[in-house]
Amino acid sequence: MSTKRVPYACAAALAFLTAGCGNTHQGTSASLVTISSLQAAQGNKPETFGSNLFSDVVTVVKNGDVQVPTIFNDLGQVSMALTLKNPRIAGGVAPTDLNAVTFTHYHVEYRRTDGHNVEGVDVPYSFDSGLTFTVTNAGNKAGFELVRHSAKEEAPLRPLQSSGGFISTIANVTFYGADQEGHSVTVTGSIGIDFGNFGDPTS
Image (cartoon, rainbow, N blue to C red; front, top):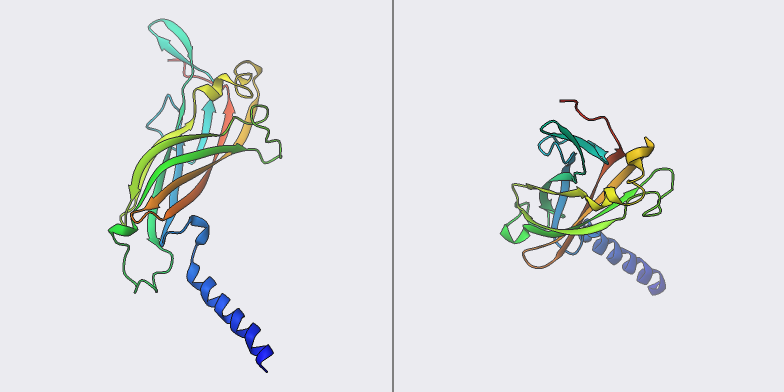
């Protein structure tokens, strides 16, 4: 009889521990951060954000009467919300100041849906960069660099300046931070990016 109870007890204990873990893929914090919006803007239109980005690999701008080929970086903007992984354990209360999460850096990786994902050949190189903003119970948003200038000077984007081709990708953006007690939090969002030499305004 005892041989039957031991596995059952272990299984019950495991189920209890698993139920209390919450969204563990985000890290060790009791805080749960979700991305409510991830948008992007062309570098020459930094105030115009949308849910998809047409990244122009070279943009012709007017300098007086002269048209100058120019490379812009492209911008991202993320909005985040904060809650608790298991509010029932916390007594149903809202997150406190200790649950606020400060993000300090992020990683951008590009991929294609056709499986051709060699960096520097099929897609731009991934990169890491820094940013600092804190997500509280009221939420928060922050801007960041989504496509670097240098990426448009390297393969596979530079050849698009003259080839007339396009590369469609999905950018996965992962943000890294910690709550005010030092517990790690990681959250990822995605946005579609089409690279090409798009038409420029004539005026």
